[in-house]
Length: 373
Image 1 (spheres, rainbow, N blue to C red):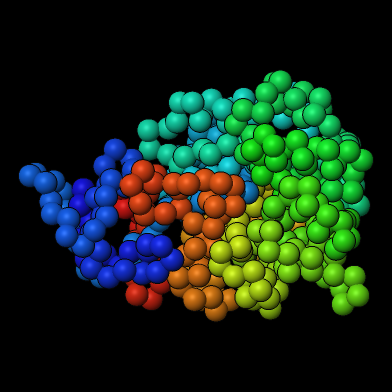
Image 2 (tube, rainbow, N blue to C red):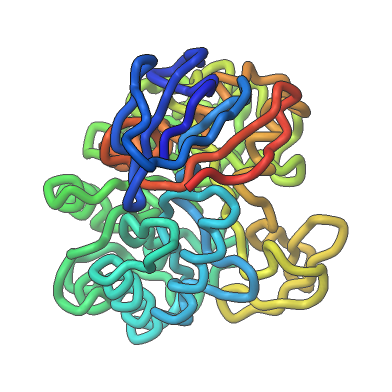
């Protein structure tokens, strides 16, 4: 298919009258002078915005499916997320037994090796456990928390780091320095989260190789004027990408503006942190072995603790523009290219040859019209 008359997002800016050729699940070519091949379908966007597919590096579940359930659920997530404009994602684990975690890891690997014909690309696993701090557990089960060590990691991953793309941990745990250095050497992105680390330790963890902050401001030391904690350090340390949940529940509107203005679109990573209740009616669901009640757009444990979200990447982009006042080109980058860059992914999140579909189509009023595939 040749897409014509698109205002396409390329290299951080919107380029008018762009033409994009797509075929076989990927972008094939871009250029203002592309001409249709004989018999090729032509789609005239009539000046609408054409965006890369979303990249979600932190998502637990969607439409009543959860990463921890293994291959069948991860395949279902891949298919359903594709329909929402997600081109690539990291199935994300919760604190669980080694056997339960291994089920999620092997399921993710299976989908990577044999992907869905029409599904969001699985880029690897994001392990959000178990090397976390019990004082900042959030909706994670404390009983499985432990100090980071390679033998413990390999017990959860079948003896190999294959397919492990990112891990969230608390840098104050014993053995963290050695483990973070080993993960960086292995090409695994290390993100700090569910942590009571000080600002000083946060900077030090970047020296060791950490490069991202998991759902910044949530489940970590707060930002204080004399003790800036994890978020304060991360905001001013250029080595860190900062994840944010732009649902209007996890962060105050001014906090979203603070993060995005300080870090900029090149370092602010929009995530959903979605659980299985995303995309389905409100009610009672589960996350990490806990009962979760979803009401008024909020997912909470029975004790009131926030338990992930029901956010979609589409809604995150809308919120960043309409609710939090981000410039459209910045909001697009935070939902596409920057998440991909944060884990070293060279193709997804862009409109360039080899990038996975779908793309998304948006009106001048920044309302999504649908996917382009």
